[in-house]
Image: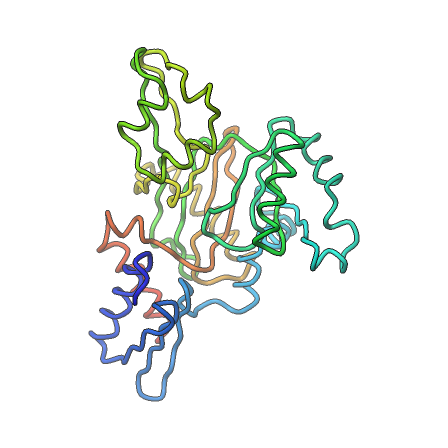
Length: 311
């Protein structure tokens, strides 16, 4: 059965191949695609279409390594520090140190963001401000992943995703987080329940305590329902129209792609305190949320990448 979350990606590949007499086999529940044209054989796995080298893919998928590569190239980026679980930490003494994590927390009074070091799903991403929250987040992540990355929490004003192919921007869009407007009568919980999706409500209960949820916001006050900009957590993609912002984001994304040596990627850049920084480089280019709004644009982007695959 084809994975629903990959439907746009897969349907675009199948449509492209059908128009060009390229044979397509979909295997592993939609995770693996085999494309054959004569003696040519090309593979796509996950959301990786096969243009990136193994090293570029691995660096992009490793948040701490990617941050190190970007820093060494002079590219402005949010730092990510690697910590390892029990199975790996024996190879690097101190890489599992809770005391070292606590020192990071002490150095960043606004808190830390803790996440799996590899992966792009946006799951198990925590903001912590206390030792207890830190230990809980670390335990939950390392129960499911071999390593984690810690970055300082920054109040992100805007997050933009740039889809690049060989240093050319194919798509540039922002991520708008869900919000509610207070009416002076209803609680935050009631306002959210009236407008938010089930997934948004789930993250709401993780990010706000009972007192905050039961508080009644003043009339006219705007409240974000999520500090994350993840599309899977309820943010909405919005094509970027401001030319100056678009140009700045593209320029930074191109520098990041060149530093990593990656050809086809989606690069997340964030604005905090008025400055733009790279947050992540994604080797697997997932555009399902945008594809529901802009299917022709997403199809054109994937088709351009497939043109490069079969060039």
